[in-house]
Length: 406
Image (cartoon, rainbow, N blue to C red; front, top):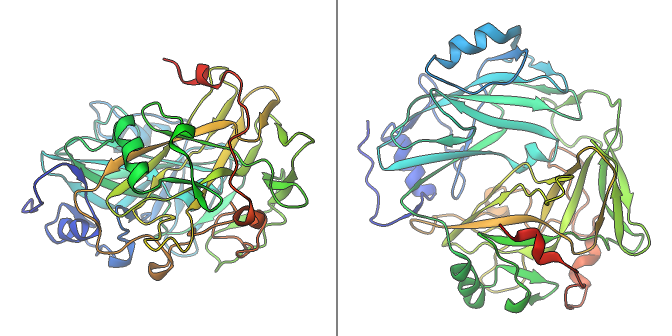
């Protein structure tokens, strides 16, 4: 079952290694076959099982089996098998996933919500038997995977076999240092502003590479979306696209290219810089809380090799969609403010296929932060004016370095 043969070295397992891991039983679906189309360049889409358990509260595993703990907290049992079921905002649900793991002792795993999930304001994280942290899976782990799902803005209808999160496998020390990142950017640009690579002097690093907000937007000053309240059911079991109007309203900036976030409201915004992930790297967007503690950005994380990348430089990166929520008080953000961080990892090998439209990827060259489930504007979308902007220095950000001091 563990006859997985990997190349020597450290790095994230690529699509061809994930195929081999499935063949070797390292990743398996029990009585269910793992669909090949769920294998992405550096990750695997995980599938919901037949049943969702509505819980009184969230929890982490301990010495007792997860199944024993959630039975103590169970308030309702939902059948996802046929028509699907409705999950209500603010309540945690636990769904056993179809995929299970038999990891070799040298291979660890990490899970993250898919970007389409985060853009719906659906919080999703993996629990494992004996796991002390969400989404982190120890080397050598044997056992099932459970997904905790918490809809935050909308009631959502889900069905068995839908994929809300992804799994990434890796071996050894994979993360790039800040010096590595700057060196990589000099050879193969990782961030672009307009049609020009971001100057190395403008990179802001601290155990990763920081991105800023675009609060200029289009000619009408529209910069993103804000979730509406008291919305109808968001039925993800219906074929897309869904009309976004009942769920999101467009947001315009204030004079001075700034925006005041209402507390506890979900916003979808875009990064100022465009991101390019070359074939030999993978990346993850990590949540970032300023020292004030009043803002959280980005709930979803994996960026596969090929995101925003074009070897011939016929296009210059893809901007990142940012999921933003202020905590307890209204909070002002400015254009260019640094609000999230990309960490980079080496690939064990370049994948045999890259992120992009040939494999059905949804967000290559995106100009709009809405989830793929919605009717999204095309290339001339909400923020389509970005490509035409001239490259210019970043706006002044007084005191920004204090945000990243230990």
